[in-house]
Image 1 (tube, rainbow, N blue to C red):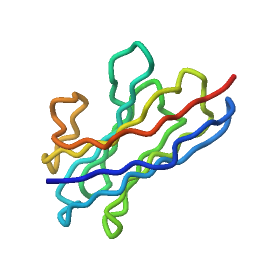
Image 2: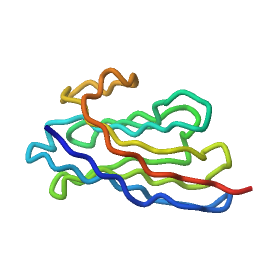
Image 3: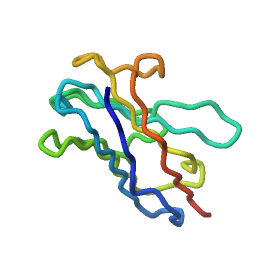
Amino acid sequence: QVQLVESGGGLVQAGGSLRLSCAASARTFSSYVMGWFRQAPGKEREFVAGISWSGVTKILADSVKGRFTISRDNSKSTVYLQMNSQKPEDTAVYYCAASPSRIRIGIAEREYAYWGQGTQVTVSS
């Protein structure tokens, strides 16, 4: 069982930055591919970013490329999402998730077995 706790959400003006953190309880954190998803009001949850166990391979959704970066610190069992140049359309609840696949970075929810409770990000125009 893996417990995930997100933090770092809040209110930011358009063009601003936030960094989300997700702390994992798993002793074998480095065994998991980690991902970030988001869900805006009235919309389905969507993939934002994913990172391999080593941190070498990363995938970003087209909507956030060039603005968001994902990273991880296995010594701290934590994954991060740095969000720059934020837009009002980035407003959503952001979730981190863990996949038992060590290599494949999935973009579908079903590929992730463990989820955090979510953290709200609101970008004002």
